[in-house]
Length: 531
Image 1 (cartoon, rainbow, N blue to C red):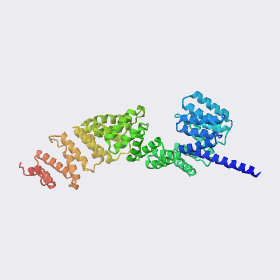
Image 2 (cartoon, one colour):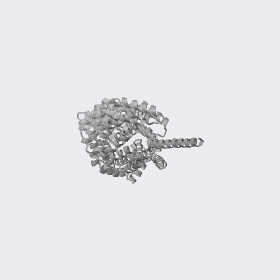
Image 3 (cartoon, one colour):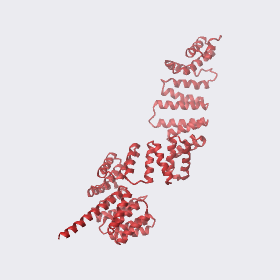
Image 4 (cartoon, rainbow, N blue to C red):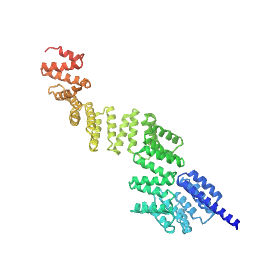
């Protein structure tokens, strides 16, 4: 009798150890620690070949890593051990479907459910396949998940899949899904899976506070559950909190298996956080490994532009154009390419690409400034003024304009009109607005005077005079700071009064010039002249 008890105890301990080991393998898979999961499950299929669930979960790890031939091998091994292994038939169905053999895939799914009887896990596995497609099939997933919960209402995984299917397939999916997730958590409170899914649902509903707290609750259960750190990183990324995104994503990378895809995502976060040097270190390594994603060249080029490595930025941007699909081009691609071309001395081509960027993003005020600068460099001042006026228009409608910002933009516009020799527009459309926006500043009046000296070239009308007078009134309170412009203003006044034959005011004007610059040659000649 005692020996029987010992044998029974032995089997109980062995069964418990096996259950824990399988659970650990599944847990490692869910944490995205795929190598660890493979190690645990590979050992299990050797030591416990009669438990065909081990074969399924090992095959599923390969399936999730897109190693479909290896996945099929382990599913078939499971079926070889037991021809009634419903999970492994479901696994075969997933592989067939993934290989575009829908007839064979559906036959394997049908075989799996015909065997399953009261095993809701099999239905949940099939539902998950439809949910993880590039374009999830919520309706098909809903059919299987509903059946799984119906025959096995205490299966937490089936309830999670039902919630996911409802989210996609039903108009009131979120409200129904949250109930499924809560019931799944009640059935398996030691797993973070339900809390992870609830957190994502809350975040999709823009309830960020509750979503983040739910994520934290999930990590309190399992601090190594990598997907939560990944999704927190994505959340912070969308919120433009790139420093927090990096911390969360770094934690994600530390936990889960390394992969080129996760390294690329991490490098993207580093780039967005303006850590260009470290981003480039990772990206260069990925290029050497022939990482197949054209976007890598986009980020490399932008990082090199920001670190002033314009030559290599141009090389990588050219590679990007040769690889990227047209539908995946964004306005920033044209923008950065234009900037990079300009830095490589190719302004004529640069402005073409910057204008293409504006076709995709016509409200990018800073880009209009870039375009205006290049047109000016090319001496196309008329085109430069158009771009600058558009920039001003955008600033005005944005609701974020302030007088100082607008005044500075009008100063630049006015200067460009002057270079274009359109003096009337420089005065009336640009410098006049500087005075309106900042009437207390001398510069607006000085610029209006400057423009009017070109409009009234022989000074017969004295168009510049009232503006120079107002400038002098405001500028003389700080004559040292405004010395050069005051000399110009007083010189104009001297010339004006010479033309008017007003000797008193003529002498006064040139005396003021000599107070500021006693060696001024024009002033010395003026005061020594006789009428």
